[in-house]
Length: 284
Image (cartoon, rainbow, N blue to C red; front, side, top):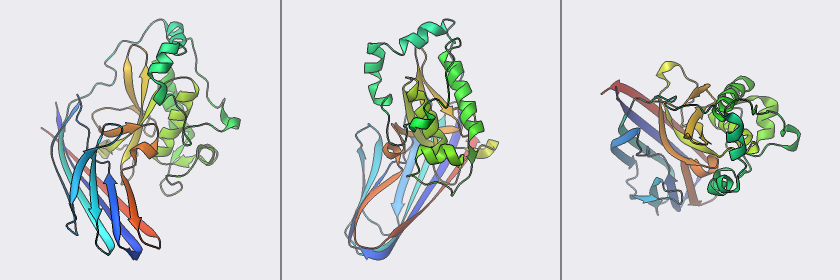
């Protein structure tokens, strides 16, 4: 049975010294796709600055805000309502010729088609000393390998907020073994790309009513491309496949492509941003 979700996203920016002009971009609108339908949404800020909607370079909707006022603080609130279909993440047939599919990953056509999501980034490149940290088994299917990798990342890292930030690299994550969803996802993506599997970093929202790990902000998971199956969502933070509890906003190569808020401000001094996300679910 479909679920109806209500979401409230809040962000507050505080500036040490007043700024005189600013541009903000919010990548927070749930994507419209075959499993979810955005019914309505509303975006406001407490200074009544003008906002508009546009499409970014990856094809996702972004809310843009431009301010010409002298301000020290501004708050943003977004409210969404959507319907999510019940999702069976195992709704496909696992191939019984695993070796051939592993070979297919190396074909020129496959690598050319998925080059963007095979590309390693600063946040999804394994340090040299950790290149062999995880091995794939060619005697089993690619999907089974990815399930085992999902479990391995979940068991290797411990969820703890406040110990990493958006600039923390994989070397620190692997050695300290603590982090949040973006760290789990970056490690999963790095190992996939090391083994020639196209993978996308996904940002969105998670309904945590079932006791899943997450924080008070947006959630992150991965989508790996399995030959002849397509894109499959893996949530290594919770050791599950992405399902009806996962509400997708966008995907990209890593967090930088999917950051929920980006901005350019004209002023001096430091700034602080606080976020919160609330997700409520009910049967439609």
